[in-house]
Image 1 (tube, helix red, strand yellow):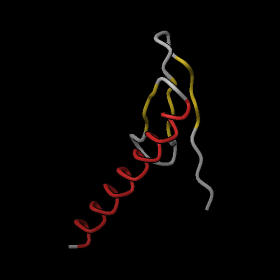
Image 2 (cartoon, rainbow, N blue to C red; image 1 turned 120 degrees about the vertical axis):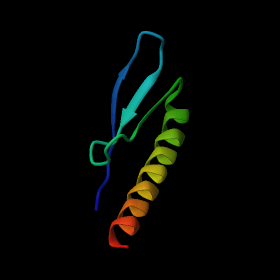
Image 3 (tube, rainbow, N blue to C red; image 1 turned 45 degrees about the vertical axis):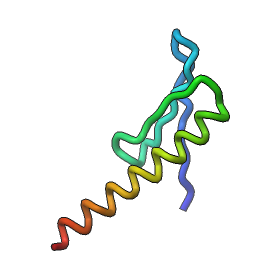
Image 4 (cartoon, rainbow, N blue to C red; image 1 turned 90 degrees about the vertical axis):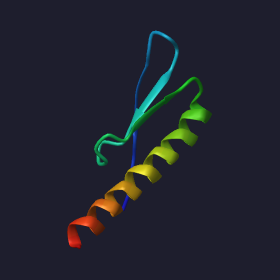
Length: 60
């Protein structure tokens, strides 16, 4: 499965903003593209862990 994210824009304060459309609420921002890549990976991990917790709760 291929997962992607979109760099939406660079805002007025100079931050880059990224989101993962396939994961609700999964987005982040950073001053540099390198930092953005690190942060979006962390955000993806947190979103996937949250989805796993929800699935576990619903199955119980």
